[in-house]
Structure formats: C-alpha cells, structure tokens
Length: 427
Image (tube, rainbow, N blue to C red; front, side, top):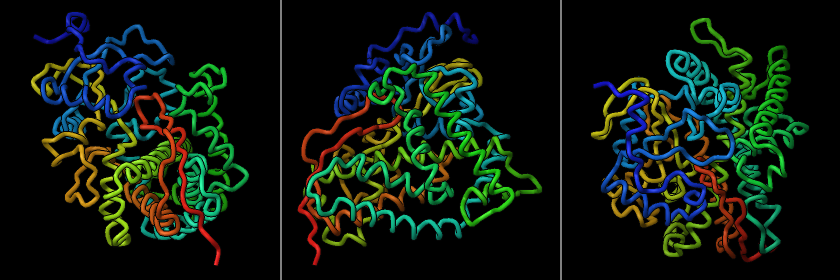
C-alpha cells in the first residue's frame, strides 16, 4: 500500500530526542551516546519536527534520521530517490530563502549537472596553484599577529580570518568589500546566535544578509565581465562548456555558497583541531615528531573528529525503502554525518583520535555521488597550512579554558576558544 500524508500521522515518533534545542545545545559526547543507540537499534528512525524558531511550516510532520555510515552513503548516492532541491537543512524554509541561501548545493540534476560542469571548468589547476601561495602567506600573517601575545581567543584571531582571507583572495573580493562579506556571511549559520542577531528577526536578517551578498557579488561580476583578471570570479564569469556559460544569478549563488560554507567548514575545523590536540597530547607528540610527513593523514582524522557540517537533508522524491523502513514521497530524510563518522562498523575504535588512521573514508566532505564537494582540496590545504604554521612557531598552543559552542544543528560551531602558548621571541 502506498503511504499518504495521513499515514504519517500514524507513525510513532522515536523516543530519542534529535529535535529539541536542548539536544543541539548539549555536548558532542552527549549527542554521540544517543547516536550510538540509534545506530545499534534503530538506524533509520522517524522524529518530530525540529525546533527552530525561524519559520513554522504547518505541514512539517517530522523527519527520518539516518545515522549509520552505510545508510548515509546510500542516500547520498540515490539522488533519484532523495533530492536536494527541497532544502538541505532540517528547517522548512520559504522558497526565496532556499534560492538565496543554498543555491547550487541544493540543486538537482539536470540543472545541477550543467552548473557543476561550468563550476568545475573554473576550478582549474592554475587557480589552485595561484591560491596556494596566498594560503601560506595568510597563515603566516595571522600567526604573526598573535605570536608575541601568549594568549588569545582562537576563533576571532585565527579560525575565522584564515578561511575568509583565503576565500576572498581566491574569488577576488577587494579589501573594501571584505568586512561586509565577512559580517553578512555569519548569518547563514548563526541565525540562532542571539548575540549576533542583536534583537533582529532571524528570517528577515537572513534575507537581508543574502541581499547584501548579492549586491556585492553583482557589482564584482559586472566588473569581471568587462575586465577579467586572474581570480576565480573572472573564471566563473568567462567559463564555457559546450557553448554554455553561467548566468549572473548562478554565479551570485555560488559566491554566497563559497562565502558561507567555504568559510564555516574550515573555521570550525581549525578550532576543533586545536581542541583535539590539547585533549590528546600523545597524538600531538606523534604529529610533531615528523610534522610535514604526517600532517596530510592527520588532517583527515582531525576533520573526521570535528565533522564541521553535522547534518545534511534530502527529501524523498517517491515512495521507497531505506534501511528496512518505508519512506514516503515528500518525507524529509536527514543524514547525520556526526553519527556516521563515529560508526564502529566503518572505523576501528572511532571514539579514539588516531592521527595515523589510514585509510580514513570519513564523510565530513559528504558521501560522494553527484554532490561530491568541489572544495575538498581547498579545505585540506587551508587546514594543513595553518596547523603547520601554528605547530611550527607555537608548538605548545593549547586550549586554556572552556570553549563556547553554538547550538545549531548544521555547523559544529565553536564560537569562542581561549588558547595560550609560549610567546614567540624575535631573534
């Protein structure tokens, strides 16, 4: 029998709490205890709508939580059954917010296929070679600014500026626009942060941020159309595949994605990496024994450990089966990367930070398929660069006090992280 919307009312919600703000305000270790139970007993489970405070959808009846590694990979690769176009976050959002805030990452084939080909054409080896030098220069500059101080808040001083400088350098955002872009990009993942909102309505502020980013991007695109340079925005403006080019709207959408996702993922990874090295001094010692040789494999484990994007949503396009459960067309299906990356069926002792772990087929960059992350190499390169700079010049840098975490269900956000270190002395 084909399930209907009415049938959903008869589904009992799982007793595990994945929907409350309290759950997402708890620690990663506390959440993992819930995930471990679900992986073992109910790997695909039905839950009540998530508490969000942003936009209430009276038709939202809940979501399927996918917690095992193999099931997450399966959903990712079954794009015909589980689409991205209805949204990639738990929350039900208005169509204009979806288009403005998610863009390319929430497209489905065939549109996704066309746009991805054009974006890939712009991500050339020459572009990556050009930005590599800037990444190392930015790492040096950021550490230069803190090296003599002995103690800082890592997030605003290191974790946040590193990816923003790198992304802006790569895209070609001039200095006069960087403060605006950096500020507005925060609202995509920070609409739960009362300090950031300062009393503003979350949905309206999100739309305002999207519009501010659109204005900046549109101005820059117009300049690059007439006078291209060697930056990524020029490459996007001039890229062609089979006679087709990206529209201004498509470039604006990708610009916003880079400024938000490209920044937040690396930002969170840096903060979590320093936390992990503080809490696991034996692993830090192992890494420092041969930093250059061991850093690439260590980066993969640090990204698995932090899982900077914790969840990603799909929507069922038709009635189908997943993990022995009957999923109905229109159901939200949420992939829990933060659970899959600690699945003992996929990783040996996942509860241990093992910087030598290899192979390490973590899902921090997604589970493959048509939405395979375009920015993987950039993310790896940035994290390796800043860790090399920090651990070479400030080898005892460590967390010094409790971090402040975000309460969102998308980014594994660290809002503040006091650190201390032996100041660098100038010869």
